Image (cartoon, rainbow over all chains, first blue to last red; front, side, top):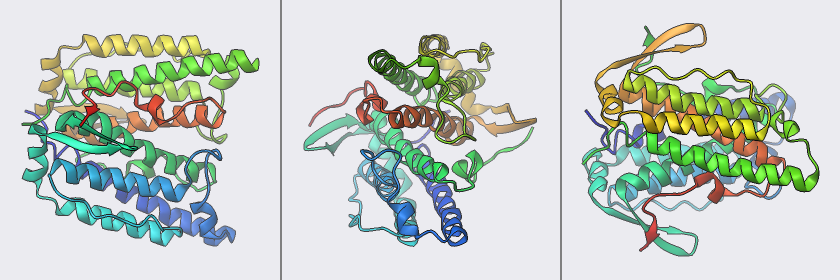
Length: 174
Length: 174
């Protein structure tokens, strides 16, 4: 028994990003209740030299769509990085989820046999597909997802680990 | 081509935890330079009702050792959760890495065919091995790892994404 690359990527992105979208709903409700301009939250950072919430959400989406697309040998859509409001960030998440759900599972799986070429800053780098998913895409995806969570949690939004986890599949009482 | 459960778990834990240990070295050096009691860092939180750094490190270790052990049908060692200093936290990471490295890869892989039973708060829950790894262990592991990073980053330690990623395997110029 083993995991296909699709199983280890797309459903993880979808669950996590849908959880993030629901967290942003709670953030939007918090803004209404506390009379906070939602753009203030979008610009909130853990420390001034880290990315703001909006950028963390954008980058988490990018690791999902670019990671899955590169494994599939497909081209990911480019987004403009202009989202400022919570509604706009939720829109980006929705587009990202729709894109990764639309990839052919067998095409994503086929990334396991290939070298994946991708930019890191100004450089073109390469990794075998399996290592690219496990040791590059996934840690980066989770990093930005978690930083978005940390920013909102520290800003006082009423969220917990359960919100972060989202709809965990096949979890049942023993 | 596909991923074995061992490939998708143990090397990810090892790379990430070794990266965290190196981050803690930077934190220790920062404490010396700034004359900070390292126990202050261990007790630092993003917000008062979140776990402190020391607990985040302990829980990240626990998801790694318990997750991998349960997949392997093995018993993980229990640690006492008494670590306060950076040196003690690095010791826990070191013991965790040694434990997961010592698991038989084929035993971890065999977890894919089984239901894994594990506690969630006061309840015993179960999940198929694959889903347990991908949708329970990995997001939880990354969550606590990232919160530890976020606490240290916000505390002014000079770390960046490269420190978080650690030694990414098979990454080469294209």
